[in-house]
Image (cartoon, rainbow, N blue to C red; front, side, top):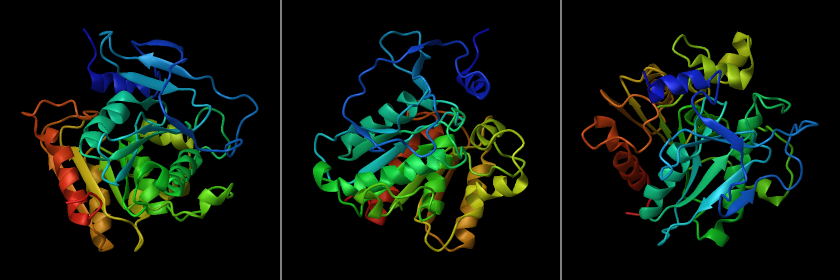
Length: 321
């Protein structure tokens, strides 16, 4: 019996390449920006080796998972008719791999069609030897927002209209960026670090939110924090505990039938945003599962989320009317 995508994703928390072909990754990713001008914070003596696992058996369809992220990068995807808005795309993968097509390239396509310049974040994975593993992805996300703003003129981007959009564990990272944007996680390395790391809007799609509540996704928690992390660290890394008066607007979309990351994650963050009187919008769908990206047929309720996200961004002025 062929395993479902949900089952493969669940297994991937332990075995990232179940049922996939893994190989070294001499792939040209197009226009890219190296996030760190020298060594990234906490660089190990031996860097991880980049690999790509192709999940699709169809040679005409990419569904690649990345591991061995030796350098954090932004993959630039320019809109044919840019409108000044930028989105930092944050793929998921349980902090053990990056679903670079489903939650990166495919998201960039629909956003590009709406005039949005996209930057896909290839962030370092915490279990690949970096020091301060619990901070490594957040270091990259903060640096990415600052680099985008520092280079805004180059890409025709309005630095006051830069959003973050994350999926699953990437939703946890985008949520952490939204709630911990002013936390010093690394020493400044150049003038770009004078820029704000605060996104003007954070979209979290089927996100991991809590790392301490019973409904957490254990694979993401352990990949980020390590096995048997204490309760204080789990709470510190839980997005719903970090909402403050400076948290930007957050858009949430989740399906009730998500069997991997329970919808209770989004509900917890939505309630935390309401408690702090922060701007937020939450869409809970009865059908959609997990990891759906923009692949659902229009007959499945959760397929509506991109239009809902775009409408919310317009109301906030992040997307032009």
